[in-house]
Image (tube, rainbow, N blue to C red; front, top):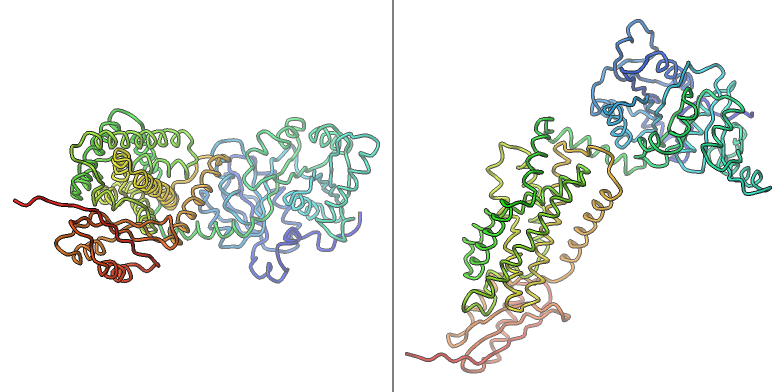
Length: 597
């Protein structure tokens, strides 16, 4: 086996991440070892010393405690840390390049490993210690398939074995016939060259012909026993899966006495930025205690269910909102906002998203969906039953279409609602949040507009509710995450996709609202137009038509004679004063006559 320059140093698996000067300028500690108090200390210290010997004088640190540690001589500093947060702070402060952890099977150990696996930016090695201590010289086997994590595992193995041991890169090729060996050698040679460049001869290369990866690894191990088998992680967050149901588990069952490890490459810049952002949030925002988190989940979960209480409150809130909209009474509409229970299941969706809780997500989404249908139906029925209700009122038109300000208000209201819900001392702020969120009035407006056959108003009001809902879900998930609500288990692909989709939807809505002219008619503009119209004319409606380019401001007047052309000029001047975008003015007139008494 040829000499690999610098192979005895763990800095080698930073290859490709940046220049040596850039990396060395930010690294102070090469190795951190997290001791597991529930595991035998002897193999942990043995592997710590093996990794430490490969450092060639670089600084290292031992983290954690162990009841048997007294009396053992350690060359490096021992720092007592308890909990994931303390470990992350130590790793961040000391700028560690490699974290060595040991696997234990209990739930707390798995939870800590998964949190560190996702939040720590340095390279990570997780060992399941086998029987006995590592021999001298050390022989390591690294199954590779070309992934970045497998390349890092290969470099770690080469650093561990030193000049006297051996690191073997193993590639398992399916039995495709006479050319299988040659094909495997060619693929393996390319993989090793990616890992070491021109120094590819510093590791041994071996191709195993087998129908399965596990069979190939076990077969290669049987021909020559190895002290260590290192796997590269297939994904950054798949630690438990690798030990639970894939190749590593099957190899562990076949070789129960073998030391097996999983290596994760240093996290990309996005992972580092997330770690820095999380550290800042944890320092700046007071975190919820365990009892407070449990109480919050129980409270939101119980109030997000579709039951009789929810239906009753939703029905009464919609009835009040619809009457207030028909009468154009904002005070009545505000009262409906205070009664509506829809905010809680929407917050439940945010909690389910950040917690990775599909059961809560289903219950909350069911409540939101049925709540919308209930409110829409009540608004439709009232619109059909209320006498002399023939045109949209001012209060309804005010909820015609969402804009950028509506999106911003909903986002801030969702953040405030989640924060107030997480702090029992701030419950007094929830009524204000409910008013700001404005969830039921748009649904009632949509139902009333459907009763009038005004499909444009119905669509706009429904879109306003949708905008408020998605903004509140995103804001509440961010707020709950910042106060200490974390996922209780690795997020499923569906949860990750839902979170990504939510962010994309909110961003697209923001871009859409920012680049399209508003459809809201400001109250000041309406008052100015009404003040300009002479006594014999009545302003029937004012609307913005965005189906044409540039959009039209349509002013509909009613009166006994045709309005003069000067009114259109005056309205055009008012448009220029109240709108920043370019609009055309269209004045419509319908004959109206009122008998005098």
